[in-house]
Length: 172
Image (tube, rainbow, N blue to C red; front, side, top):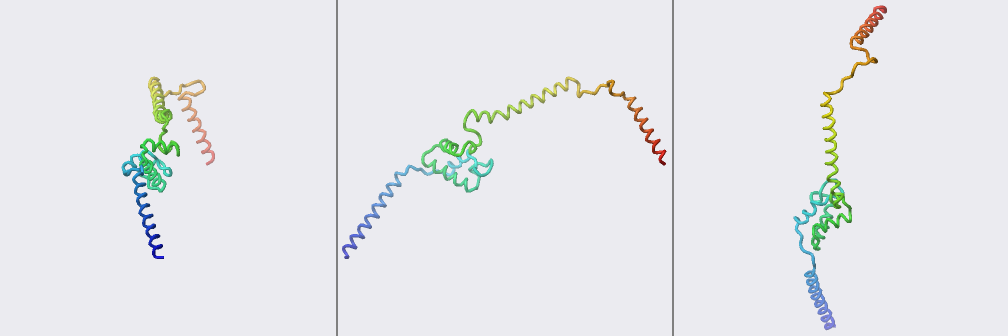
């Protein structure tokens, strides 16, 4: 019985020793490399938080951002380039994670359109200002047959005032 126990114990020690050797060999074959926080933050500065609005991944303190930063670290440690990591996030979550579209045409449109519209508004304002200045200021209403002249309007006001005073005097 003692021999059987020694053999079992010997096999157990040998098994543990062999598993330690295979685990150390497996750890040496691991293609992952250590990734610094600076590398993670360099990529995270280009990505936006999925929860908050207009906050980059490197400055946000939400749990979702912490998980995304760990995912960035994992992808970088597997040998992906920063561009590949960003493309991975865009493919999974859409253009909103990078703030501006990745497609060159959409990116150009999103960056040029506000400037183009602002330029058109300024051009229209300048044209209106120059026309107004050329005409000599704001147009003045011209007296026509339908509008009474200034002296006629003064006379009608005097007539109106006289009637009111007469009505007030009659009531006293």
